[in-house]
Length: 223
Image (cartoon, rainbow, N blue to C red; front, top):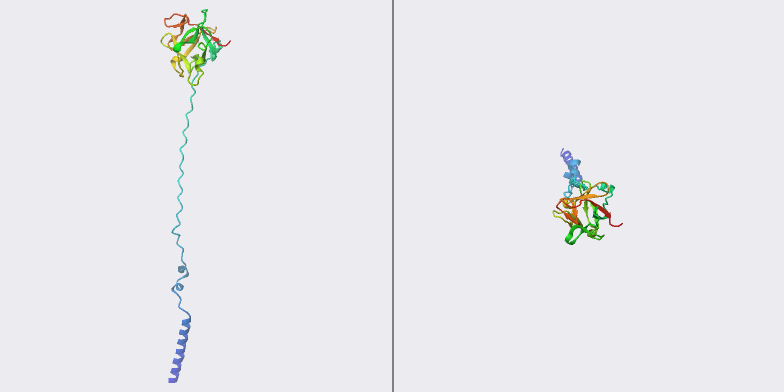
């Protein structure tokens, strides 16, 4: 009986020793091996230094360019009737007292005084009737060419309250520089009306007493 027990114990001891020897060659599974595969896999975190996409800048509408105001065309007097009657406009002319049998030409004198004391074709008696800036017809400015050769505004004849007229710097639309040529029949004669009334000439001088001739005519400066 003791032999049987001893043998049994020996057999059991050998089995235990064999199992321990096998266990030494096979290490226990690590904790990671014990985790499920999904848990063991690590998810790479988003890069900390990755900047978020820049927000798109809102489109800024450029203000529309302000429309330039259209330049208004200044009115210019219509002189077609005067041309049809043989009155020379926009040409170099002499302005003469009509039907007095004398050469009495409108002329620029000393200190810019303008009167009918010219008797010959000179730089001082050469005149030019240009259309005035006016919506009314037959309105002119008188510009002696000799006094308008340089650049600039030039010089125009101006009416005055006194007898004689005067030469002054031109200014478009200035009332005292605008004259109305009022036809006197169909012979080419006309009256010259200024800011202060009709121009009357007595013995080569402009008068204010109601006496003198009012009929004038143009004569081409260069025949």
